[in-house]
Structures are given as structure tokens and as C-alpha cells.
Length: 155
Length: 155
DNA sequence: CCAGGCGCTGTACAGAATGCCCAGTGGAAA
DNA sequence: TTTCCACTGGGCATTCTGTACAGCGCCTGG
Image (cartoon, rainbow over all chains, first blue to last red; front, top):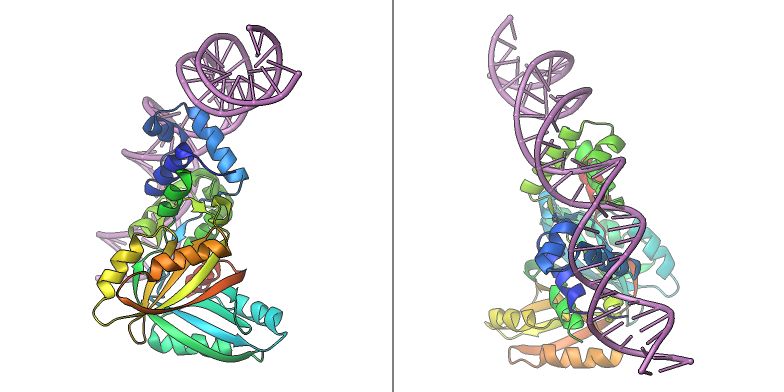
């Protein structure tokens, strides 16, 4: 079910140097290649590792502004709002949260001015009653998973 | 500066099937292998692609509960709070946002009960005045980047 | 106490991909 | 026109992958 220390080390290693292959990983970890291969297969089939997609930086794509918007949704309009927001490319992520029909979404924009356009597009939809936006000034801790992996692998 | 359609298609392809190599990608895209190699190098050196780290699912690691906490910070305590939160493995992400010394952080926990422990640890720090937490019920739109890449590559 | 199952090791081999190099071509900019 | 640049298509040596197999220590159930 859970992961052990070898799994943890393997994930850490892959996170630090994604380009290394199974063979090199086995050398670094001091185990046989077949072991690394088996562990990787298991981690992927268990869903612990979803994949190795490219990690794209929105800022380098021309979208340096990030914001979080809390949306208040009209009762029963949840599904429609989801569908609507899924069509907006600048919506990178959307969560339904506890509270009064609330949602939280992550937005990006080309500039602060452009953010206005994005927000207008997001909230320009019937099911959305109100939106409050917080612009990200600094990403103090970038999305990370390694500390959690370490924690989980030490049980 | 920006990316063109070939870059966009390449990123989409890698996002869908990360395991394919440069050679296979060149076949799919109908271009020479050297071209794909050159594009990839450029995308990485430009920072558009940060890497190919493993995409780890916290739920599969035993942390199925996600929450967002808005923290109100005492004036001038920002740096200390950042340092504090960086030591908590369950804090996956931390942003400084506009507002009155506010921060927004993403948390995970083993259960709703465990979330209490995590929150206690997060807010158990002098610089934090108040915290309000929203538990994620449904991840309506999982973190995605492809729509944005498409948008960016069509300019 | 013993047999089986399981995971890891070490090895082997064919097929495939990688990193690197180079000559040729076509389009765009100077 | 000339130069520059990206892309093509080919080649080469090296390396990695996928797969297989025998051997071995460890744990567990009978």
C-alpha cells in the first residue's frame, strides 16, 4: 500500500534528475536494474506516480501573473460553472470546496491588466454570484512533493 | 521568445505520452529527429519546460485530503512564516498574495482528523494571526497546462 | 521443521534509442 | 545577391531498454 525507503529514494532521485534512465538510477541507488524497473512499474500501476509530463512554466509562456479566485456559486449551478471554467485556458486548476457553494480556482494572465480580462471571462457566467481575487505576489514555496514523499516513506 | 505551433505540439505530445523518446516524437510530428532535439533543448534552456519530474499523487501516498488555508500574517513576520511553513511536509505550496499580509497555502492530510493536526502545526507559530481553511471536496479541473500552451502557441 | 512464495541479484542478448557529426536545401533577412 | 539559419536525412559508435532466467535469502503458512 504505502511506499518504503527505496521507493522514496527513487522518487527523489527522479525528481532531481529526471533525465536519468532506469540503469543509471539503479547504479545511484545501489540496487539491481530489475529492482528499479519493478519498483517503477509498481509505483505507476498503483498510481503513486501518475506520469512524467513536462513541467511547463506559465511565466516563460508569457503568463507571469498568477491569481486565486474564490467563486460563490448559485445553488445547483456547480456543473455548469465547471464546464464553463474548463473552457478558459487561463484557468489552470479548479476546486470545489467546503462552504456555501464555493469554488477556488487558479488563474494566470499576461499582465495585471490582462488579469481583468481573464476575470471578466471567468465571472461572466450566470451561475457565479460573486468572486474575490487574490493576486500572487511571491511564490514562497513552489509546488513540491518531495518532503511529503520522505515523510510517507519513513513509515 | 514565445513558442510556435511545433513547440506547442511537442509539449502536448510529451504531456500525453511522456515515455516516448525524441525519435518517436519526431516520427509523430513528421519532422526530423534533430529538429525535435533542438526544440527540446531550446525549450528547456529558455525555461519553458522546467523538467520532467515524476508527477506524484498525494492521495496514493496516503494523503487524500487537500485544503487551502488563508493566513493572516503579523506585519514584518513574512519571512519567518515562510521559513516555518517550508518545514512542514504537508504544506505543498505557499503564496504571498495581495491583501493585508495574507498568504495562501495548499495543504494535504491523511484524513479530516489529521487535517486538524496539520493546521495546528501550521498556525502554531507566532507570526500568524488568523487562518481560515477551505477543504477541497472535488478537484473539478486538475492542474493543467495544455490549454494554455495551445493558446500561447497560436500567436 | 519444511516447502512455497516473493523480492532482489547478476547476467545475457537482441533491438532500439541516444548523442554527435556532417553535407545539402530552402526561405528570410541584410 | 549573399549570408544566415533552421530543417532534413543520413551515418556511426555507444548506451539503454525490454525481457528472460537461474540463484539466493527471507518470511509465512502448513
